Image (cartoon, rainbow, N blue to C red; front, side, top):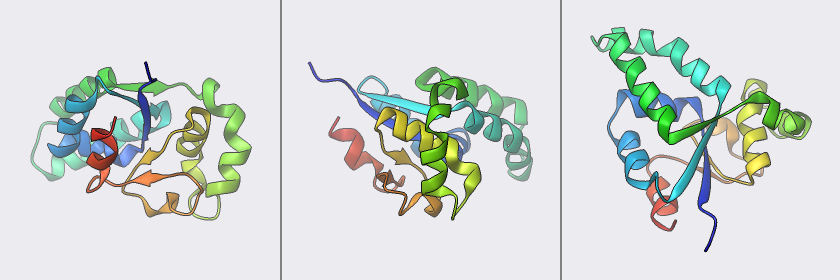
Length: 142
């Protein structure tokens, strides 16, 4: 039996999973076949930004935080202690674009997994990246 495919999610994908339908649908549909991961800092970022996005859309922030908790049952939260040994190679790959994104790159390096993101800063990092408009190609081949 093959190990499940792995995929690392950026904070912007977590936010789309809360605020939209498409990402959440993919997570629910493919959660049994694909192992989803995201560094804890991405969940922290999503929690910090959700109230602002929810208010802009006229929604109650607490409802959206509950959606993020649901996503955390599908997407494994990766503790910094697990990926920090990859910090230097991750920073070498991403520092010219956005050094704050190193935990996502480090997690991808640790897991030997692609990144699901809408952030162009990951392009050219040497790690495969998928955007939401193409992610189902990766997911359905799980």
